[in-house]
Amino acid sequence: MSQVELIMPKMGESVAEATIIKWLKKEGDNIAADEIVLEIATDKVDSEIPSTAAGILVKRLFNEGDVVQVGKAIALISTDASAKVEAVVAKAPVIEETVTVQKELATSVVEQVAAVERVSASGKFYSPLVRNIAKEEGISMEELDNIAGTGTNGRVTKNDILAYVPNKGKNKVQQNTTPAPQVIKEVAATNGAVQQKPAMAVGAGDEIIEMDRMRKLIADHMVMSKHTSPHVTSFVEADVTNVVRWRDKVKGSFEKREGEKLTFTPIFIEAVAKAIKDFPMINISVDGTRIIKKKNINIGMATALPSGNLIVPVIRDADTLNILGLTKKVNDLANRARAGKLSPDDISGGTFTISNVGSFGNVMGTPIINQPQVAILAVGVIKKKPAVIETPAGDLIGIRHFMFLSHSYDHRVVDGSLGGQFVRRVADYLEQWDVNREF
View (cartoon, rainbow, N blue to C red):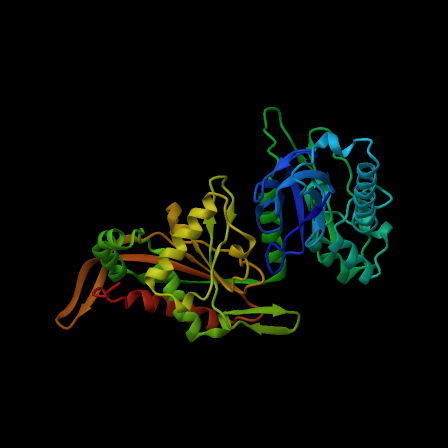
């Protein structure tokens, strides 16, 4: 009886491991090729894993909640079309031998996994990445056990151990303690030092809502960004009357001809991409004391999900796309984001991010940088205002469409002059929009 291994696939260029959320098939179930077998979650996005072959699920090598490295076998599938579950446990010598080989193989894989990535003597679980970092940094298992984790069920994440490493041995790490009844204690790690916040009393009638997995990831990412980058925000008010008039004029024919709704987002992205080409030192990342200047302009667009969470799909090489191309990309990514159909590659590799706070009726915002980028732009709501219009015949009062642009940037590497000039240039491109432009 032939069998194949179902492998944890590569889920993106920066994804090294994934957590098994739910098995959709039991041992002994028949599986069709490309049928979904399990659901997994990475630190970027949730995904479904299909079977690579038709057959019977002989063995699940990991349990729900286990963290598995990319490239590891997660299940064994018998591809013998005549195989039955009962046949696997039959008494025939050949079948017995096959079952023994399967058991030995499964046991060997499980034992190897347990030896490398399962739990410490105290019962705490550590991912392969965390244990490898601990080994490289000379962190003992006892010391690792005492690091307060911010992951699911207190699991120590990569960010936790990397935050701990710089001050290893300098700060005494406090163990998590069970909070007293009706009291919630929060612990925040800053550069490896654990600071315990004042206890928070829970009153009668208060509702305690546990964060879901994505909200925990967002929270960790936002705190990490604030700890990493000294944020500065510059503001510009832009007259986008020409943009509004052009869109109002062409959106009907655009949708009729192209089958796509024309929103303001592709217009904003085009202006940002042009400004980045003018100021390429906005399109960078920081690695210690090194500045990495990015070749590609990959613009992320913060997208609100029905759950209330936020995700940032990325439009790659945005500077090479026209308005039609940008519109198709924006609509496709937004629709798949809301349907939970994004892949890890769809949300990785961004070099700059746009957040449309105006979609919630907000005038402006002070966005938090999406690490490892160094800048993010928030666009506010477009509102009609009276304005002074300069003409050859003199100044006039007229009704114009205005919006605020809020540009947050990492002051370690982006000074006020660069950050301010960049957002001003974005506004210039929007204000100079050609109302007679063809699409």
